Image (cartoon, rainbow, N blue to C red; front, side, top):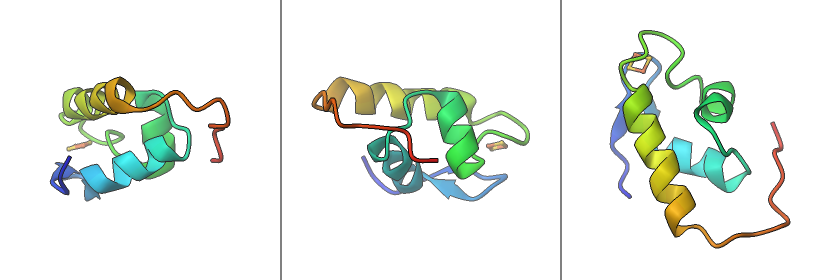
Length: 69
Ligand code: FES
């Protein structure tokens, strides 16, 4: 995972999305709420979904993860 810009409308990078996932976000809706990515034109929603899926596939299941937004 790099630090590419995922959401141009709201200037949200992949790093910011990953940070939200580490804090407990588990869905596109959580990412939208936490970062505002995908809340304007919506063209980045597929990319956000890919980042979420990649993170979930690579993440170790941690029962202590809680949403902190
Ligand atoms: S590029 Fe993300 S909402 Fe437009």
